Length: 479
Image (cartoon, rainbow, N blue to C red; front, side, top):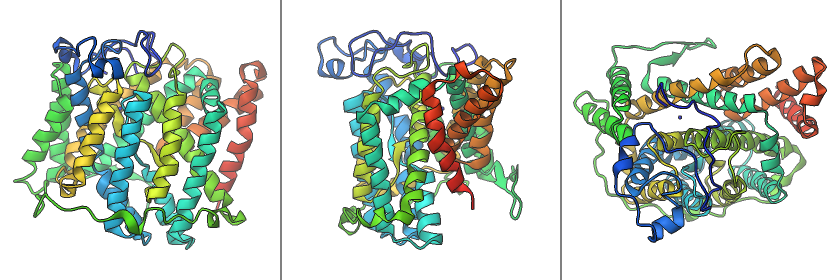
């Protein structure tokens, strides 16, 4: 998740086309990949041009390939981290690794071909933690029943998408909250980068963060990578993210930061031990409803927020901060949640690291197709995912996240009924470590402060309806 002279994140001034349409698109990115505009575009009648409308989006094949590789490398850790978390819940590690990669490939490919948007879809770490740590680990619910809960939350997504309710709620969000979503997501991404690099550590026994050990090689490499990435971006060097990650990865070999695997080629395990092992009806026990609702609300707003923020970053939103044709990515998301749960990969959602593609110039689904191809290759070279150290991806997360904070300057700070709910989204996203919960808190605060100020007309009736399930959601979070 622009350069100092770039239009701030969020709703740009262009007139984007609906995903997959032939209409005009938002402005081309003038970030690190701007120099690729000089690259040879796809021929007007070529298959890629007809399928992805590269010219209309102000992009070209080389830019999309670089963006897709950037997304893949930034999100490749999911193929290792997610199976590791699920293994702690008793899910077989080898089979679930294959299942997770297959789910990422299929969902990301669908986002590219059906929605024509540059996103990687993978199991959300928040949802995975909820499943593995809380529901299975603490409450001792069988993991196959928990996958059933995720599946039912996806069914709810699909129904709401078909009825047009998901895009209706998205349109109801006030513009200042959409700017806050971009800023909150940016700070959240930046914090992930600082943590991954060891620049920020959590104090043991205290609810606080502190400065990490700057003498550690990983922290030094991450700082050097951030300087390099900023310099390359300022010079508008194509593929700045890829270059930075490659340089830090290679530099980390002699320092012991990059661990070389014993072998790169490995046959994938069969996913049969986890695929379709879903307790669909067992998940409908009454006492499990709060879990289903928690999955639903968190994933709903995480997907919505990431979609709006990254699409705005790519110049694919309109003047109101909405994504034209948003129902298509919502359909993909719904199907991904259902299908992912069926395969054994819970809580599929759009990944924050998709912003690496947007900042590399990715504007179309071709980026997603390239990223999906990268994950497909991991089925044969899974150890490669462990080759890229967190010190190499951390500079990308820090750079994107910090530059996304520029969206906050578009919020009218003189009006406290706008400023406070917007600031609440940013603060609670970081304090609670959950992007979806942060957005929900901002929506609740917006309705309440507007009403308390006597400005009822500024609250659409739809937000009053949304307020009820959100209040229930926060009530379920109380221990």
